[in-house]
Image 1 (cartoon, rainbow, N blue to C red):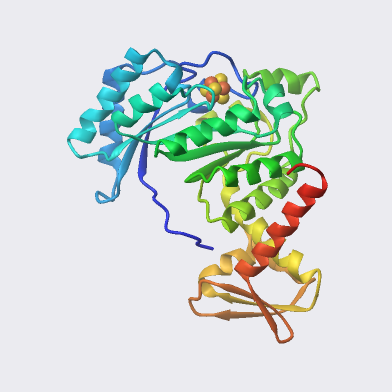
Image 2: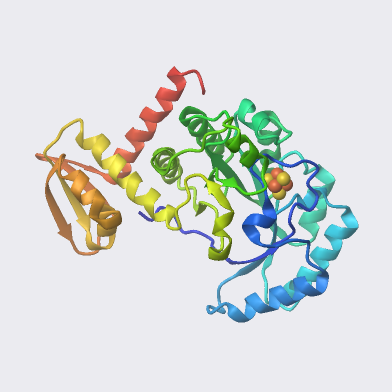
Length: 359
Ligand code: SF4
């Protein structure tokens, strides 16, 4: 279900694999998921930007150039400046609206943020991954939850768009911990989030942990369970999810050693979320009715009509109407709509967390 108008520019991703990283996070092997072996020269950056600009069909849509794949703000300032100046050539020509960078929450001192602000950086994506200290430690992130929170606040206070990256199923994590991270993310009021279930990637430290049985990846089902809860939380607070799952080119998919990878993960999560919410409601009442617009029928059907089959146990009538955005759940004469059920479900999730002492 659509929840808010979302600013979605085209992104031109420039990968700077592990550039600026002072440590290696356990799950990371940039070259194995991006196929980029070394940082590009300025000429290569320029060519890559031109290639993307030619490729974009909608010439009216905003474009941002993004420096991803490392810790941009930890690069020596002269190197940052060179990359930024190369990208700004395209801003000056009005082909691009501005820049975005990804970095860590503990590497953004105030003077760095001032520098980025002066240089047309619009969006800062922070690799937070988790707000649970034990998970951050086990993942070798090198910062704690307090630093993660203060990083988010600093980015917001300087007027950047804030993106938060989260990962589920990291070492030492749990459903509760990932839920806690999602609620903490809501408190940070980001402009968008990205969520990646942890995959075991070739040549990462996690691969060694997996091979010596000290790390067990989540199954796809376990992953869908937590991701669907997170999806519902962010929908409840109208926070856009810009990506669900790592985007790994087909030719690099043999880099995935283990873990809950699915090429259409985002769709699966959306279907699972709808099923979860519907059955959470109907389990309390049974014999329900769903009133749904044709445009949302894909949610009711799910992947290979799996949702439709599963709903059979709880729903005795389905009414399909013409284009109506909302979805209604009916028990007799009582009608409850999707946002209301969502609100109640999230309240319950939050109070469960409080009971477990996580909030
Ligand atoms: S900070 Fe990001 S790019 Fe650097 S090692 Fe960690 S996950 Fe990889």
